[in-house]
Length: 179
Image 1 (tube, helix red, strand yellow):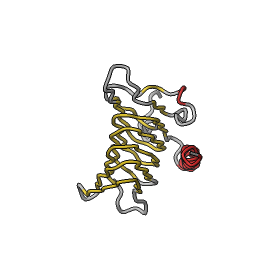
Image 2 (image 1 turned 45 degrees about the horizontal axis):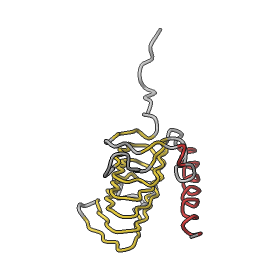
Image 3 (image 1 turned 180 degrees about the vertical axis):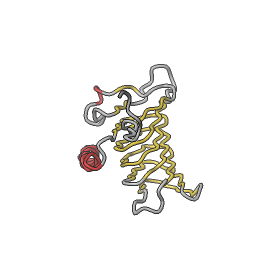
Image 4 (image 1 turned 135 degrees about the vertical axis):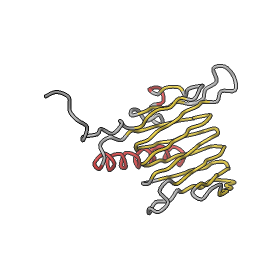
């Protein structure tokens, strides 16, 4: 039981370290925290992602296959299938995954979705309630860690909602208004 309680703490510490490192290099990064998710979490980002999935599928496309970073996925009853030159589909239970550095397109589909991400990109969240009012988990953008303080987080949306992680880049070369 202690090991299960330790996992969210370790994930939070690792992401805090990466957030600090990413923040030093690139101050305009965003964060995402999803806890107890049921449905679909899609990420298209450059940065770091740690996660767990109780049961379901994980599709990972490595957008920067030539870099030194590679996706890492483990789990019980893990089955992996290559579905494209840079895309893998993982199925199983108790999946744990880590994508550091690089750029990834990740689709997590199932139950028990816990994701922590730091970076720049786009996130789409879509809760999948089977009955009216069913708990589909919580999320937070650029704020609270839902693993530590789920009461401060927002319920997963019942319809797909798209969010941007990190502010859009500013173009310093654009002409300035005024004389």
